[in-house]
Image (cartoon, rainbow, N blue to C red; front, top):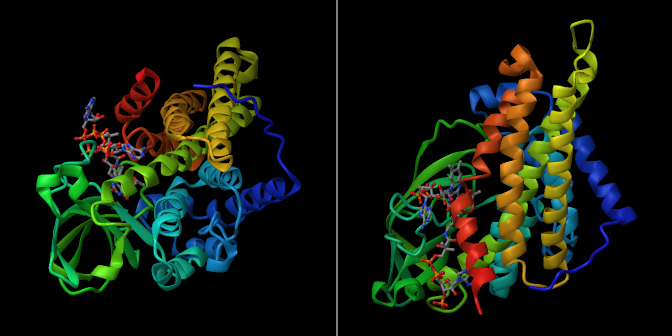
Length: 385
Ligand code: CAA
Ligand code: FAD
């Protein structure tokens, strides 16, 4: 494990993209964010605008309709959006990291022309379907089957917790073709909304990221053409793991943004709210909380940017991405809890935003591999050889 020194000085282009995301978050995500959370309303108008801004296919080659940017730019956008609305940012993360990246890296030219070009512009959005009722962390235990029928696969089974589950048009679905081969028998298939036998289950009523649309999916004898398989026969589990390695950088950036958003609100509040004849920032207990938050957020940011730069510079990012997600999600949890505390009673009501950030923070420790799974990935990596 070499230590790479790196320069995080942002280029003019990266600063512009960061500013565009910051402005978009303030102007378009902030208004209505409390209502969308309360009503579990999918941010459809905002997703359309993010497509127009190029946020939904950020790293995709412009020849396929993408913005052709680097991972660091993507992380900057994720951070800014997540400061305000993590429900919107998870849509961005799934579409970019799990769907577009997977298709661009491993898809055939036909698949890219047919699906990626529309996903990258946000004309349609995608979903990534690995988890099942009995296969979450233990992802190799896929029970969904894709039986080889010559020119097509016959897909049967259930996926759950699928982000963009109701709103997506294209679903990348992992399924077991040959159980005897264990994870080497899993395939990744492109399934379209509307294919016969594909049913979308009810929407989950969640603790956080309530504007995001999470559903279970049922497949009953869905005929998926062979040309919709991604990669060689049996590549599906590797496909999922490789894709998730990058996805974890996006979720780490989401966690960083949630933490930074809560910190900014708490810092501002501490300068305004008075108790015992002075602004509460003058009470050292409050100032020290802010000092801890700032330190931890900066440390998280270094890990997140490093993972992004590892990916951009073609270094292995399994380890740095897992470390970034593990740490940033813990910082998101700790920071948001303290931000509520600094707001006192106001922190407990919806108008001040920090209670929502606290609820949203929790998911970053669960999806795209729980914190315990990140520790498995990290420990295996540092202990091998
Ligand atoms: N890159 C390439 N291949 C990888 C890999 C990686 N990063 N990680 C594992 N693999 C390969 C292994 O090499 C192995 O293949 P070989 O036998 O050919 O060597 C195969 O995958 C199986 O690996 P393991 O033996 O390590 O499998 P395991 O059963 O011990 O599980 C695990 C490994 C890391 C725990 C994995 O199951 C895992 O990541 N679980 C968490 C699942 C997850 O993250 N789900 C997220 C769903 S998507 C989501 O959540 C989206 C959202 O919310 C927005
Ligand atoms: P389990 O695997 O049952 O884990 C339960 C507990 O046991 C956890 O604390 C876990 O860390 C721990 N544990 C399990 N195994 C071990 C071990 N070996 N060592 C130590 N501890 C262990 N999935 C998708 O495929 N696509 C999506 O778009 C998607 N979006 C999601 C959105 C939301 C809002 C949610 C809640 C989930 C989403 N997921 C998605 C699923 C998510 O990835 C899983 O919930 C997650 O991977 C954990 O799986 P599980 O829920 O089955 O928990």
